[in-house]
Amino acid sequence: MYPALVAVPVLRQASRMARGALIYLVEDDPEIRRLVCDLLAREDFRCEAAPDAAAFWALYERRTPDLIILDIMMPGEDGLSICRRLQSRSPVPVLIASARGEAMDRVVGLEVGADDYLGKPFEPRELVARVRALLRRRERPTAAGSPRMYAFAGWRLDLATRALTNPAGEPLELTAGEFDLLAALLGRPRTILSRDDLMDMLKGRAADVFDRSIDIQVSRLRRKLGDDPREPRLIRTVRNAGYLFTPEVEALP
Image (cartoon, rainbow, N blue to C red):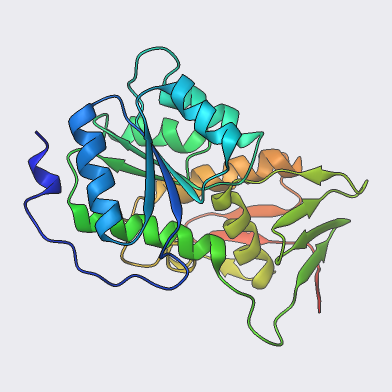
């Protein structure tokens, strides 16, 4: 039994974007699978569950979900391996929900490509809030008059399709978290953004503040952009202040 999922009723605040979203839950414990899927169904999500990696990949090949909730400790291929493989396939947001909730476990989970990390046991309201936050970030519409694309140092980021192309015109896959971070930096170039600024822009204060998550996302984004962390040309660390996106950015309609 997993009492944290049934002890407190969840407040309904579903947005039109989140309602009906397809979520894959990868969890080897049958009772947790049932409880989490019931919880998500009550909040107007569609949930399909897989007990292991093989079952998950069968679901994934059939249809790409809107979000994945992933346990780490499973028989066969574990959750971290699944997360690594997902990075090269699509930008679907991944929320790791694991009993391994120590700080280093969170670091490792974020390093391999997860967009958020939630330790077990968790409150149902927190799980639902994090799911909705990830879905809002993925589906956030572009406001009228806002740029549809950013160009910088030969790169282009299309906000509508969430596609990044390098100076050679080749596409580069970004996770949902990496895309959101890059869009935030491009929206305020040559401005020092603290970790708190970025946490507010990316997750909002409803999320559990885990400062290292921003550092990890920056590190991953630098690697994708080929930005040497020892002498970064694009994303510069400003000691005791935050991060500064240094190139000139052109906002295209």
